[in-house]
Length: 292
Image (cartoon, rainbow, N blue to C red; front, side, top):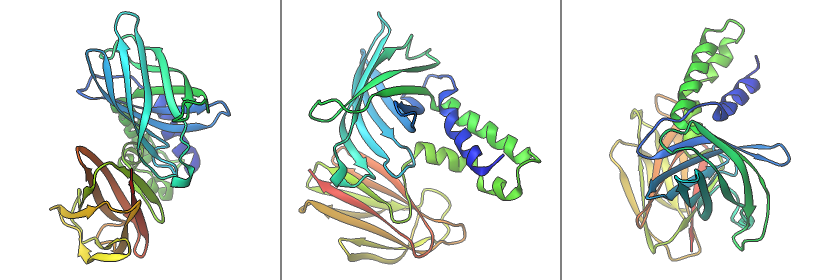
């Protein structure tokens, strides 16, 4: 069993689990394009009187990870579930490539509270409503996906056919983080589309404080130098006056537990974007605030 095969198996578990009720409905799965490419996909939404509001994340953990807002409907009488992406929140894709193909889905679902999983064809449209890529969505409940990942992790750890080196690389927690949370890695850039004139950037350690130290720059100006990440949020207000404002995190020390990880929150009016950097010493990652 190779490392590559194990990672593929974890990703494929997206489409093989059932649904359990939560206050916020959350699904993990894949988009299958007509060329047989599979792209990890997440949906999270709330339903009120048949109206759907929430967000999607395409290419979870990938180089083109993109979060979009969604709206839609669930019709209890004819069991029709529809949603469409309409507004990009952030993307790792270069902003010069922002002719994004937005998902428009219409399919059948028995009941939001009892449905096990759903799948169906979708149509893709550019923001100007011209057609782009079509494909298929295969989705399952996130709780069940996480449970199956943890089961696979236990089997891997017990297996005599898997080397200890691979076992050390495989972790259920890391796999779930990759599938459910935006992570900005070495030399990656996250483009965040701001809608207000002032945003608040907060940085902190959401796990065990282990003396991770960073330099933080805003447009190449050092704002925090040799700063040790703490549990308490460090807030940096930023005025959005230019088309692009670049926030750069540089890892100086990985502390007692590698890698260097920093939780980053961007409060843009009522919207809160949460991400995390994951870096080795000397590496850097960027968040670009794009004025709209």
